[in-house]
Structures are given as structure tokens and as C-alpha cells.
Length: 262
Image (cartoon, rainbow, N blue to C red):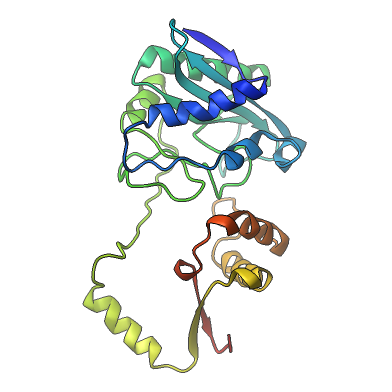
């Protein structure tokens, strides 16, 4: 097997292609937009480069076929609650179901972090904000959300056999829009819908600045300071919305207001 650092435009394309190859034939898989992955590793687009660095590798078998990829990064701003040692990150892991190949990928990431003075490795995480490319799916392998990791079911075993342990678990829930809503939800909706103080609106692509401001209000009240999460600024959210605009479906992004005429 041959481990190659990504240093050219062609190797960067191969880095993207590994994800496609590993998930070939999976009907639930949705290929991430190339630009969304490339921007993570672009110092002109990712402000995390002000505080650290990121390196990528691809892995080929003896016949030259792509079989894996990984990235490793340091970021002096990155810290979890309870961290008492310098922690580096790894992410964008994809690999065939082979522990030897997996170990090669994790080893190169670990050795880089050790060289940079890190004493622990967290992953899969993003080189940047936590709103994307974060965590390992271990159950519920439905189609991924925008800018979220997707994984093969065997990845969990590969991680654990290498030595990774669960840092924290997060459960995410959703509703199937094709199924009828439960009576409990309908009853609660009827009660709130009858109250004139409540109103709702879906997002409008032509008014992103207004909806970015509303998003910041809700997010900061709910999440800022929780689990190390920082307050969001309106400009950050507006930029995020503008990036999402080409794939944004307005009528699935709803806001609920209380005593506000929207």
C-alpha cells in the first residue's frame, strides 16, 4: 500500500474521489459538494488556518487503486470541556474494510499530531466550526444531511480496534414527511395555532439577512455556552446561508415567532 500526502490539484481530486468510491452502490449516499470539502483545506476560505494547519493523505493499494483517505489538523483554539492536554483532530476518514489500511491512515495522522506536540487525537471532527463534518455515524444510516459526515457501518469497528473510544454520544431525530403526524403533535399544533400571539414563516431567499438575524437570536439563546459552543454572529450565519442558497429548499426551513408580526 502507498500513502501519499495531498500536495497537488490532482491529488486533491483523488481525495474527493475516495469518498465516492467507498460509497459506490449505496442508494442512501449523497455525494458532498466538492467546493464544501475543498474550502475546509483552503487557507483563503477557512479561518482555522490562522490558528493551525491541516494535512491530507490518500491511500492506494499495490495496484494503484484508491482505497482510503484521512486528514489531520492542529488548532490552538480547539478545546473541549475537561481537556487537560493538547488535542489534535482527524477527519474526512474513508477506507475499505481493512484494519491494516485503516491503521496506516490513523498512524500517519497520529504521528503528525505527535510531532506538533499534541497528546490526544479527536475524530472524526472538522478543521473549523462544529456545524459540519463532525462525528461518526454508528446507527441510522439514512441519507446524510448537508455538510455532514457519512460512514459505512464497519467504520465503528475500525475506529475501536485502532483504539478510539467514544467521547460523547449524540442522538439526532427526524420526521418522515411521507408519514402522518401523530395525534399528540396535531393536538399541540391546534392549541398553538389558535393563539394569535404565535405566527410562523418559512425562509425567503430574497430576505436572507433578516432570517440570518432571527437564526442568531434563536441559536445563541439555545446553544451559546453549551458544550463549549460559542455565540454566533449575524455575519457568520449570513455567509453560511449564502453558501447554502443554491441547494436551499425554502419551504422546509421554518421559523416560529411569538408576539411578532412577520
